[in-house]
Image (cartoon, rainbow, N blue to C red; front, side, top):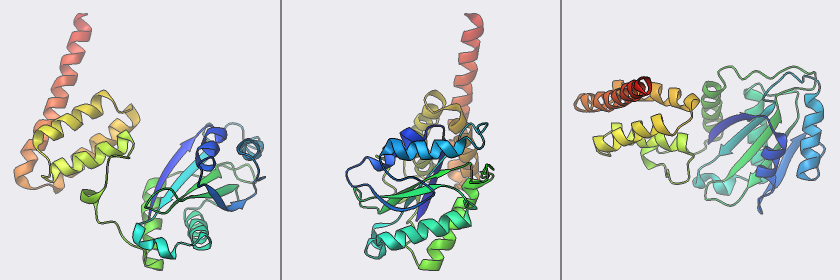
Length: 241
């Protein structure tokens, strides 16, 4: 079981994404007028009027499970897991829907919730990524759910760019790929990935340097050096122009 957290501005786009797949099924909800995607989005937007200053009221969490757990994951059990997850994350007293998808080998569901609660207060997102890791581990241990085999076994083809880069860098650091591959992915981060994710991935690279084998540390430092050199050259060209 893993959780991926996102926040956004548009309930309409998020709800259309999670509900309009052929296999989508709403398995739990709270405080939402169920109907078409637009009717549900309107229901969420009405509650946002209690606190119109919230720039990103949309909470979106994808909970994914290992294929080995599929026989146990009835709709009722998945809805129960989603409910306990929300409670442990401190996401309570607010609107939400839980939508299950069946189109992949990994059973998964999407939770869409309103970050403006029933009293007009904002649901805190402080340290939510760290809390997410803690909560999913608690639920895996409580219900004996299957743990992931690690980053080396993840299929990266279907991941978003920012997520894919992290796994590819990890594999290069651990010696599965060549140092040229590492240089490529670090450069890709600089050129393509959004600045917010870029800073996160840079910190991730630095943390991996400390857990890598001594023979690889110099190679990783070289990859980071190449990136810094490229940035410096680019700035010089800008000034000269």
